[in-house]
Length: 224
Image 1 (spheres, one colour):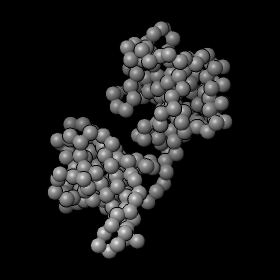
Image 2: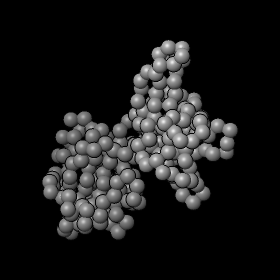
Image 3: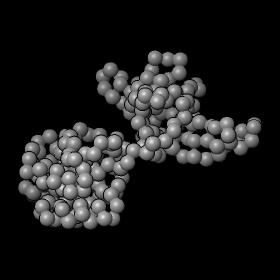
């Protein structure tokens, strides 16, 4: 059963005893979306289709679909139904997680179902340089192992990439901090002429005190 007017309900609390599933389906093609809707309707699941992109961090190279739920929601029947829905689309099942305040969060009685996009395999630069930054110039090494290192320091962490988004993750010892960047390809004028470049622009806030390098854009200028 598709629902249309749920904004107030989502922001406050579940409007009824019937759970609502918010389906993020932008990675599915037209045929897959038709199958999805048919399966949801057949299972008599209350749902809302959401065209927003799935958060980069929810994408995976596995064949499961992320399902976020409120900690108090333990609806095994609904989870079983949704597992059958995603299996009809060729996925192996669900990756069930609790809402923890990151990226997307709904109130009790509301679930988030996120169909992952494909992880694009690209060749990232080995080193990116600070840009649009109040700090002294620095550079970050992007290792093929998925690790990043602030050159000539012990500061390091993990990186994720799903075109056009780069995410740097750092463990402070008290918790994880991450910054997302959107890459733009362009050209810049240098003393050697016009050169291709890529700028990774900060998408989050620029007020990290614990790791101020996350407040800066990053850039690489290619020789060719």
